[in-house]
Length: 111
Length: 115
Picture 1: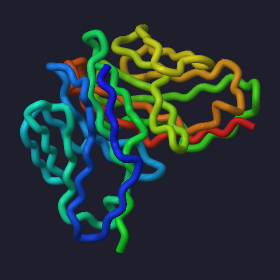
Picture 2: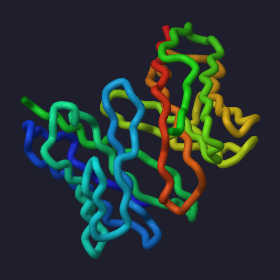
Picture 3: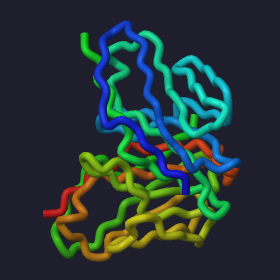
């Protein structure tokens, strides 16, 4: 099972771009990389998923280098409402995908 | 939109009680999961199910059991609640097993306090 490593916390200010990097050195060939966002007192919600290169949607961008040993979630021009915990998930376990969350990255956006 | 409904938002129980946490999804998803979340520890997987009447242990199954008699409903059971089971419990579902491309949909969570 590929393990992930993310910073425990990050601080930013409104209007800035925020990049959160996740390391997954043991990622397997078939693994996708999925990011979730969790606000206080709510369940996580899916925000973006990718396999290689770059993926962009209305919420974020996901950058994955060629070796796929890391990925970077990019949030453009953050606002106070982007304050949340962000989780990076990868991994298959014995051929079965078992979604395993780490501690995530707590992002605090300041005025 | 997928809806995952957890029966209670807040629950207070006494030590030794049998506790049922119910979760229902409305999108015919095959997979359902129970996690608990404690401050500083992220989400930890308790049990999951890929089909009706099927269950598999996650990372922390001790003290818990589950039941999936119908596809849409996945119940978490605390046979004899203890204070160390005070936690936020989150249920999730996903459509199919697609080799890591699954997207989880979560309920709002049940904050359980065991006194």
